[in-house]
Length: 271
Ligand SMILES: O=c1ccn([C@@H]2O[C@H](COP(=O)(O)O)[C@@H](O)[C@H]2O)c(=O)[nH]1
Image (cartoon, rainbow, N blue to C red; front, side, top):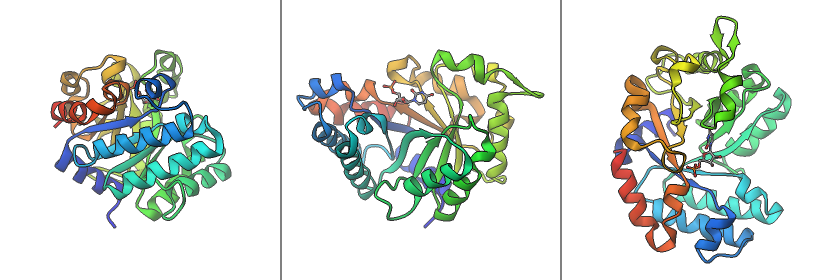
């Protein structure tokens, strides 16, 4: 099987850049007429997968909305992950795991090992304990052709003070980007990416075209958080071709009857 970077490039080519977030918020479950339970989250996720399949190439389940239902929530998530992958969608598990290296290795195995109940194509991880603490997770991902998205400059305003702070001659975000970029070894589109919010000016974080070159960029913040598809080129210019544009609530709020049309409409804006 090809590596994650190659599969992502193929998804871009076939379906464009939109990634549909699967975030079964309590309010959305109510709007969809579904119970506030693991069963509700499962049904919500499966219907979203059905609507996404064939219309986009990538989905991003937000793990927290399943985790809050405990073991039944994880069982629901397993079904959603399996259904999405069976439908040919690339699945980014948005779990934002971050810990010391030995513990990260276990997270890597949980989310990225073929046949694992929680198998995804890529996982979001936090570099707050040092990018080096993710070393074993990079290795597990590489071994199985999977991907990682490492938080660099997040879409929420609270992140900026830390992420734009100096780390030697670079900002924290740019240091993370440089270390992740090295892992991609000059590939046109590597398997190891960054999270860079679409709500911010990446220049303020030192995230130049050079430091982002060849690195997939997961960009939440489109839709509900205010960034518009038309901003993609302006925000990311030379590296826009590597951007996974993520929208959750702006799509999910269409409800079960309207979601297929909403996905098709939004996907066309990122084609
Ligand atoms: O910097 C980040 C990293 C992750 N997220 C996640 O993306 C979605 C955004 O949902 P919307 O409804 O499109 O606002 C959500 O799962 C976040 O946890 C982010 O927003 N920003």
